[in-house]
Image 1 (cartoon, rainbow, N blue to C red):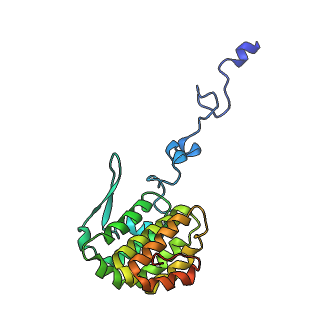
Image 2: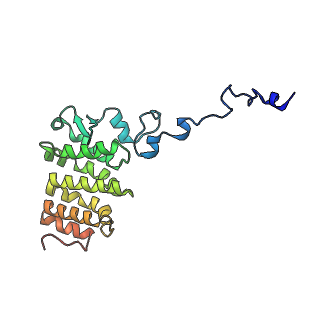
Image 3: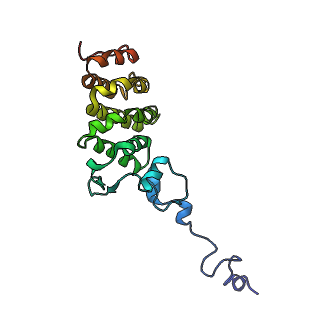
Length: 223
């Protein structure tokens, strides 16, 4: 028997005809292209039993009365019931807890939801009542090492100050410790300074000694 005859039709044991004995990599082995390009986007095909953050679980289970509406240019939230009818306790507190999220859509829902609730009619009265509950999650957000999370915390405190004004003064020391740690950081210095000015402007002159106690080099807007 010649070598040509012996080699004809031969194949790797166990391989199907025409396969050449080589398997192509499956999508699960290489990972989806979209996942590799945007790793911080939640995978809708992921195992639903996989552990989620507390905020993600609450949102997924309908604990926040809004849904994300995808637009061609930007996204928005649709509230049901309307935002002016939403109970701030516990929804605003839950959104504050979500500010430390790093994965879409949870980052968007938490930041935009927090902002929109504070823009609702009568937001001041409802927010003042739950200020003690808002302080722990806001401090946690401001203490996060991720620059994006820290910025989200600064934005939230600025929005909160604009709504409740001097009512925030008695709670400021809880927030100022992580905020003032970044006062000398070049990446955050300007934004932190803007926030301190906003806190002083909204909180009045009574706020000045509170700010100075945590940031001795702070230059008051009243000087």
